Image (tube, rainbow, N blue to C red):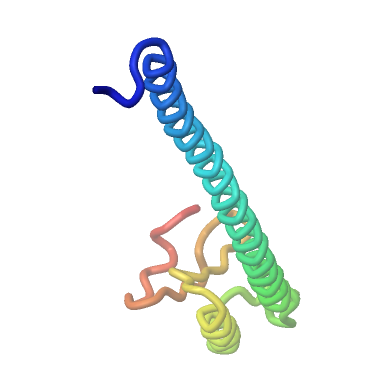
Length: 138
């Protein structure tokens, strides 16, 4: 004795299979849609963070460059350099002061003064002694 037999049972089994397949299909479809939405949201957030970080870094770099340019302009406007005194204790002292100021802003390898012919008259460098100014040309 069977409860349901024949065509109604066949339709019932097919209906259950269709409902199960449709449920799994919808589940995976919505999962994929949500995953894509979450990925895009995370990507947009990270992109915005990187843009803001890059803007901040560029502002700091620009500010540092303006400060370094200003310090070098102060050195160029020095009374000694304006009067073409390109060597001596006073010029060396001014160069050392500007070198120290520049190193407080950013790492400076060396700072030098050359004459009109490109001959180095004074040179300051980090970690090494001064070298003979007449042997090196730019």
